[in-house]
Image (cartoon, rainbow, N blue to C red; front, side):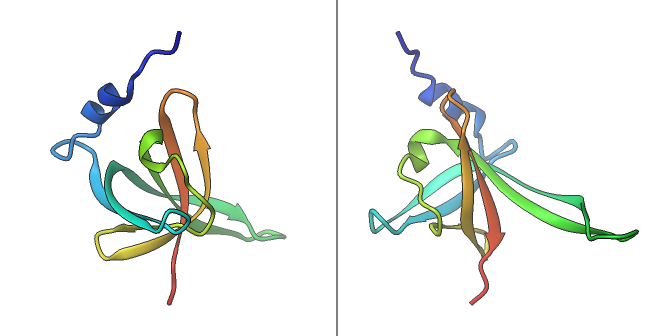
Length: 106
């Protein structure tokens, strides 16, 4: 029997603590909704060949799976005034999904 942790996860995504509000645009459903999650924009070293290492940002947004259950590549997520394209996602099986993002240039 599955345990519904959806409401418990929402408690962890408190805007007064670590979470931020974002606008999720699902093009398949033609819907735009406000969701909460934890935004992380870690900078990681990337091998560029030879002796050179460059650093690249890897923006991610962790949220409830139920908020992005129909996520598709190319959907967008707006945090503050920055619009991101969703490139990939990982549903971890506990009701939490991490969206891998890249800045959407117009």
